[in-house]
Length: 113
Image 1 (tube, helix red, strand yellow):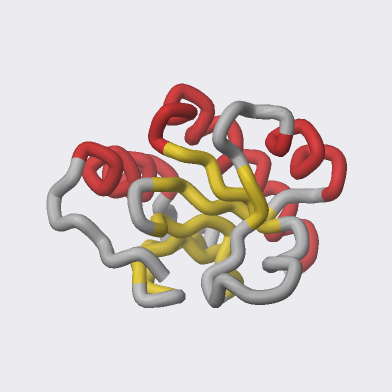
Image 2 (cartoon, rainbow, N blue to C red):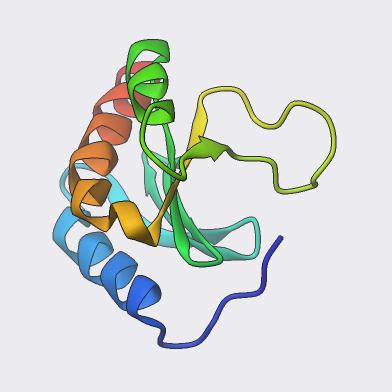
């Protein structure tokens, strides 16, 4: 797992997005997972910040769409094997898409909880 860079532009953006999505009424809160900040809905992770990237859990169709983006790849925190199925890493260069993919991740994970 890449080490977090304190107060980097990507971390600031993640924190901003986390504040926008957080909602006690909807069961959405900022937490920590994989040694980094994350967003959970009803206790299940749907997005996290890793290194300088946003990581989101998506349905298969959105995951496939995301994989077409330059720099996007499957989340593989241990660096071994195939990585985590349906977890997409969106680099900071794709930051304009972070909110939309975070929303898609929220909808997907919320539908499973």
